[in-house]
Image 1 (spheres, helix red, strand yellow):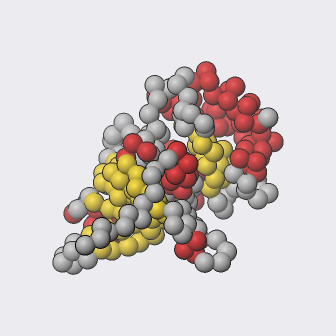
Image 2 (cartoon, helix red, strand yellow; image 1 turned 90 degrees about the vertical axis):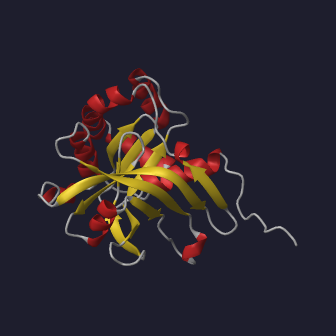
Length: 247
């Protein structure tokens, strides 16, 4: 009997970068969870996506919704990202991330950071983010399947998505001021990042997130991700790196 053909390609740095960009530039995605009392049937819903400082996806959901009840009952979930473009939607890259969901308690040390980062990406969510029935959930990545287009399938691990750096804590403390400075004083550089590094259309691009592995950009309608060639290990590396990206 012949062996079953392996359709997966060897996961390389290019595939890892594409997977990270598909997750970190996603404005929304399809969340799949196990509906309670359904006999194991999956329930899929659209959710807004944020990214925590360590690369974990974050969602903001109401306790009244079916998908939130599902996550509380069984924390296993899948998140699909990747926007179809012109032509055949299956010709465009997409990512399925399998993860474990954990509710972020309002009195926890993580809540303020996650809320601030999420609302910079989704400012309209400030209308309901503090409602009593809404909560943030972190989606801890376990493994992922990347389809980069026809014949380009890859399997990825949790480590492929992790943002780990000794500069992380210091970056959290300075992120808001650095973003305000760049957006107010260097709008041409921000626009350059979007158009040159992300091939984005013209627009009023703003930085909405900075972490040790890259920048998150938004024009109010869509999100773009600039991945650094390598993660910064010290906050002193950020300013010269931003200058280099502008050249």
